[in-house]
Each structure stands twice: as C-alpha cells, then as structure tokens.
Amino acid sequence: MPVHFVFSDEAGTYKSNRTGTFRQTHPFFIRSGVIVEGDDWPPLRDGFRGLLGHYKLPISVELKWSYVGSILAHRKRGEPIPPDRTYYAFSSFSNEQLIGFIREAINLLKKCDFCRIVYTVTDNNIEEPIAKENLYKWHLQDLMQRTEYELQSRDGLAIMFLDPQNNDSDRCVREAYATIYRQGDFVKTYLHIIDSLAFALSHHSFGIRLADYIAGIFNGFLREYQPSIDLFQNQVWPLLRKNPVGDPLGWGICEVPTDSTVRGKIKERLVAAGLLAPDGREEAMF
Image 1: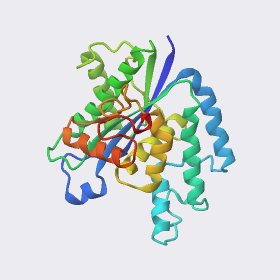
Image 2 (image 1 turned 90 degrees about the horizontal axis):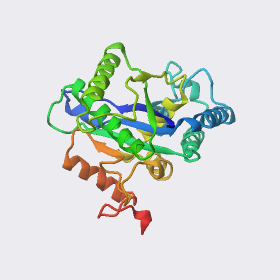
Image 3 (image 1 turned 90 degrees about the vertical axis):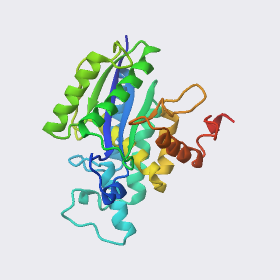
C-alpha cells in the first residue's frame, strides 16, 4: 500500500461575528490540501531546494504567499517597503522573480507520478454565524473525505500534515480530527488515512509552503487578482481534483458549509476564466 502525504494550509481568516469591514478585507476563508505520493517526496524536496538556490532566496526566512501580496501592494502604491516588516528580506527581489519562484515551485508538482489538489472554501458574506470551532471541523472533514475518496481507487494510505497556528487552535483541530475519524459522518471508516493528525512547521517543510502558495493563489483567484488568476489557470488547475467530465465543484473545490449560491459564485469565476463551460464540463475538453 503506497504512502501519501497530504499538506494543508489556510488563506484568509474567519470570525463568527463579521463586520462589513472584516468581510471586505477577508471575503474568504480557504484551506488547501496537496496530496502527493511518498516516493515523489525526495525529488520534490531536492527540486525545491534547487529553486531556492537558483533564485538566491534567503534560506533563513520563509517566503510566504502573504509576503508576496504585501510587497506587490507596496509597489503598486509607489511606497518603499518598511525595513521593520517581516518581508523586508525579499524587498530586493522583483515582482517577476517572486512570482516566478512560486510558479516554478508549483510546477514541481506536475512532475510527480501522482498529485491532487483539494480546496475547501467559506464565503464570509454568508449571513449565518457559525462557531469557529465548527467551521474548522467542517473544513477538515471535507478535506479528509476527499482524500479518502481519492485514495480508495489507489489503495493508498495518507498522512495529513497541517501548519500549526497557536495552542488553542491546534488543540481544537486535533480534537476535531479525532472526532471525525471516529464518527466518520459520510465515510463510515477512514481506511486510507492514519488516525492521528501531524503538524509541520512551514519554515521547515516545503510541503506546507506549497500548500500555503496554493491556498493563497485560490484566494487571489476568487478576488480577481491577475497574478493569482494566471497561476491558478496554468499551474493549479491541471492538478485540481475533478469529476470524470472535468468539473472540480464538490470534488476538488468544496464550499463550507454546503451552499448552492456560494457554489454558483465559484462556478461563475471558473467560467469567466475559461476553465469551465456553463454546463459544468471542462473547457479544455472541447
């Protein structure tokens, strides 16, 4: 039974009580999942290290997706990057270099024998207040379910790695994982996922870094940021989990909680980007 690694990270944020300003600043909360086979891990690791050296990026400081967004925003406003910011270490790199590194890093996944990407997404404009603990549990549950479904056909075993946030959040996520695993709401028994969640520090794990980039790209795609649109169309879309006719909705993109209106909004963005036909089939199939 081949072993698979599932790396997961977040983009955006969520509060149960959301003001208009909060919703405008944080319209979405997204969790990504990157599923790769264990045998692909060594070449991925070596390729990522090679890219860091090629682009001469600092080894001691992690390039986060949010750092790239902040740097691009400063430059768009014609502002210098303040030396006290955590992303100042990357201020000497051009926009093209920063985006180019992320593009090539995600392209490493295309060389894998097996890779699937899964998203769970919450639209913060939904009116119903949901306890943060419950929402996090639902995101994790959908990610676990899609991983289980994917590996059933491969007879593989998955180990799930998340980026730690803080003690309270991490404890909540661990407890949610254990509850989902034991109860198995829709997948009664998780035969293809191990029974304990693992945490990996992003500055130590290139897999978590890739999950960070992939989560941020989809957040930017939904917000119609051009660099994110290009990266999503060309780097992420080919790896996204889809149904037999090429539709990722409900398969590789799951709205949390289930909401036909939110799903319709996401579909509109995919159709506008030329990725899906209005009937839900992948445009590339025509």
